[in-house]
Image (cartoon, rainbow, N blue to C red; front, side):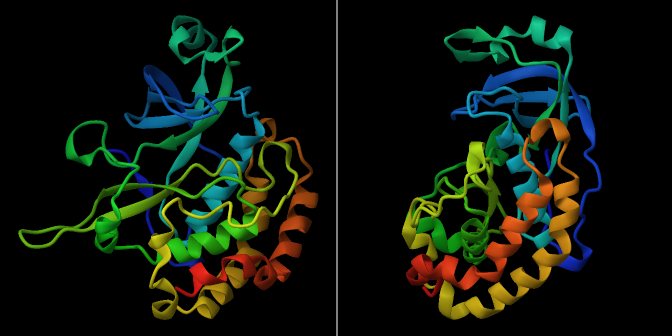
Length: 278
């Protein structure tokens, strides 16, 4: 079974100083989406959703996804574990199914690519799903995390809708729960071109009723206070851990931009007030 970064107090959260690496050994399938990610089995026995350098959305989405996921993990939100996935020249040549399909077929470059570990399992009931009916929303054991996730997405300028996958949580003969895990953060931090555009309500979860009732139970003021204190401590380390080949922007400029947005967080959240307050 594959892994996810478990929820933990921010002060005990693991902040990476470098990126670990595994080797791709088997192609499984292509995934949906503009980055043309692929599922690969790797040398540690886990399956990874791999975004590759040179993909149609641009290599920057690898750096964005890594930064967003590591920040969220340090904040204690449920995200997949991430690693570098090494693609050798021989593996690429022997596996044309993973090549990019744009105008013709183009192989990715050898080297280290971004891997997000499959949450759940590749077979059976542990296989994660991307869709829940609204009638199942009350079964989500960590539904309050969507409130914190919205605060993060607004601050990080996520230019895509919020995505999550769902796996079975604790259950018994008369009890069932579902766990939400947040994925796909490549369009944070200004997206592929690094240009911050605050497009109103762009980063919400597709079904807005997910936020109904969260505000009164989980005070927004507490969420913002925790978020603001934590980001100051974890942002510099997470920025330094981004592999250079995945990011073309000055880290100092990105840090300055994000700290400025942190100072104006309440203003950034104003368009989302109806959802944040339930």
